[in-house]
Length: 361
Image (cartoon, rainbow, N blue to C red):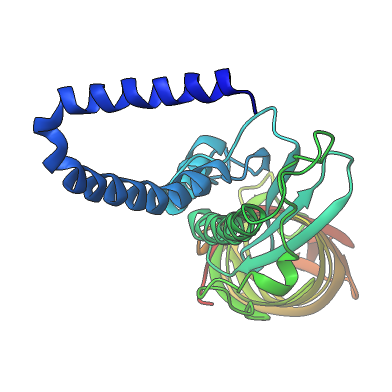
């Protein structure tokens, strides 16, 4: 090192010393300033992980499908439910990962499905939940809980990875900065505490009006009571019915009043809201003369077999259905007045009606 350089450094040190002497009254505070500086550095170091956690919030696209008109929660409400449990809104339209949530109505209640998909379309996780409640809000709350839990697990894992990365050299500029993939939902997402196996058997009691054709001399109103049991796609029904009286009059003023009643059993198969059934019915006809001097009452018994087509809709614990029955009589009957046949029971008859039932479980 040359002598001129040494002199220059000595001169700078001397000038620095002079400057320090000029402010010598603050020299006694240096130890206190160093203490505050160390404390500030420690506080900043403790606060740094919190900033790191905020940087690892997982963002996903939401694809939500449910029957909102049928009473299910809307997409905005589901977003609020997840955000309230997670503490921040994880949904962005431009996020790489996609989160699909689907709610479908079943015979027992509702089914929910959660699917995680990468930007390249690869499915990385799936979870299914079910609820036997007729209220769609319950399954929606269960799904929101499961989604929030999965996002928390993803964010916690990403934060741990970021903390470990602070002790390593920075990655190359070409490193993949995508949002971490969610863990396997089937392995880590615990089922909601409300989730339960649906009851396989449902019992209902109901009643309804109907219109009978070919059951009495004129089309007439019927009323019926029934008990139904449903097991998955199959059901059975036991019913009793009775009609209002129908009167058939002759030109001379004489006539006959006819009532019909019966009991039936049906076995049905269901697909979605539609069903098809086979029927068996045991019926009675009551005929009483009118406009004659000595009216008498007679009874006739007959059997019928047939088929039914029906549509059924569940509204909470209530079940509403419409049906059309076709019946074939196994034997022929005639109604006789004054030794003359005034009405022959048709071989084929039909019933159309609507029912309302209350389901017990």
